[in-house]
Amino acid sequence: MTNLLRKKTLSASLVFCLLLFTKISVAQTYNLDDNASFLEVHGTSSLHDWHVDAETQNGKITVSNLDDLQLNALSFSVESESLKSGKSGMDKNTYKALNTDEYKTITFKMSSVKSLELVSDNNYKVSVIGDMTISGVTKSITIDLTLKLKDNKIWIEGEKSIKMTDYGIEPPKALLGTIKTGDDIKIIFKSVFQK
Image (cartoon, rainbow, N blue to C red; front, side):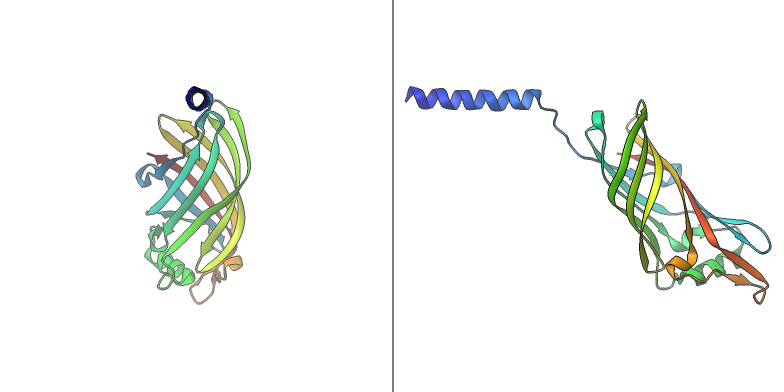
């Protein structure tokens, strides 16, 4: 009986020590603060450069082990018809090209972390691989970004160049085809996430 009691006491002591000295990694999810974040799409045309701003976006980021950061999940979505240029005619052409009657959102969902490098205190260079879906077409892409942890918030910033035709989008035209939009666009974002 005393042997059994000693074994149970020893087991309990080992478990306690293990818990005491092991850094427990708890995943923490942060939500995108739409008011503090921005996302812009920049492009060219035969007349002038243009850009649209995303007025409605959502997203989540999940991290763990803040002392040795691990990025567990990252996702974004933008309501397609929240992309605004300030010109109703251009917006109408944009929504037609994106087929917003059928495809209401543009999304990105991370599938893996390619690299994560600490640059300075709580500042990281990150490269993620994920699926971007635009107008019903999904492509695997790599996005390089910076990530900063501060005051219970996470800031991420980056840009990504893509071709509209890669997503089955015909670059919009205006004035009977005399004004043509270029195929290349650049997505620029700065997002703030908080608990």
